[in-house]
Length: 315
Ligand SMILES: Cc1cc2nc3c(=O)[nH]c(=O)nc-3n(C[C@H](O)[C@H](O)[C@H](O)COP(=O)(O)OP(=O)(O)OC[C@H]3O[C@@H](n4cnc5c(N)ncnc54)[C@H](O)[C@@H]3O)c2cc1C
Image 1 (spheres, rainbow, N blue to C red):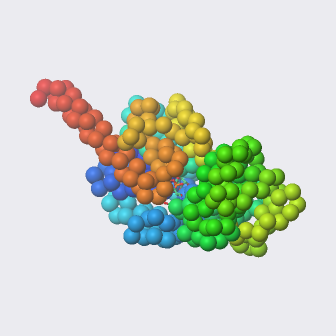
Image 2: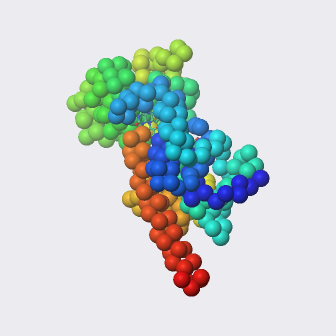
Image 3: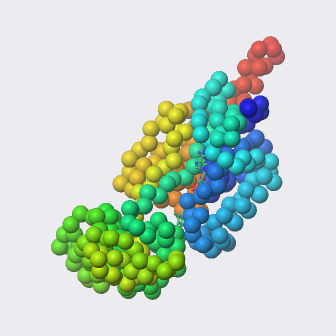
């Protein structure tokens, strides 16, 4: 079934980036449809922090409020997956998993990223609870606790130093990271960060509470663990339209100009899809910036179309 209306903008993703863009575009009297599968990255966390004025709000509650605000200005929110995208004469067509097709003049990809977690039993189950990654998102919540950093890359040393700011009981478990040189070992020792070299077998937990990191069969008691996922931008639709993703030491992302324009004409990206380290507030800002750039682009196109129409009728 095809939705006959041609929207000005279709936004893939109703997270912090997509909904901010939807509000700004709808307030500019643009017809906007947001397609959202409802699985924001921070859903496993109890609260979203560093969100000014609403610190600690439940992630889904924050987005529900954002969706209501977008709808109050006339944006349409469609729940479900967009599974295919293609260009047509007037912009883009999107196929949704429910069998419907929608059309739009411009496309904003605000589909976030997938956190590729280390394959250690227990990590996935405790993710966003007592297994964390970001000191700004969860650092306060684990302050003063026994923190184990599961080292999977050279960046894990930096992560251990960051968490050391929050607790004086930090252990770096050198799991699959390259050997640690003497200078790094000295930096860790000088900050009283213990180093345990060996394969992490699994995490031992009691419900959501982590008890220990198990290394080569031996328990090391901890209350929280930090991991460094690989951040993989959701880019299927972008690639269907001919886009290619860019490699980054932390994962892959959709490269854009500062206001979110991608190299694919008519396609913008914002939030974690194009900025792997963007937190909620930065994703809001990126969505808003992209919305302004898209509206400006449509304003230019509308003016050009109007000039052509006047010329056609000989006005
Ligand atoms: C465990 C955890 C805790 C975090 N805590 C914090 C915190 O406390 N404070 C903070 O500032 N940041 C936090 N973050 C980071 C925060 O989650 C991101 O900054 C934010 O979610 C990025 O917003 P986004 O809109 O780019 O993507 P998302 O919020 O991930 O939203 C993307 C949306 O797009 C949808 N989607 C994807 N593909 C499709 C498709 N094809 N069709 C339809 N819908 C689609 C998804 O289902 C999702 O709803 C945390 C992250 C994690 C992993």
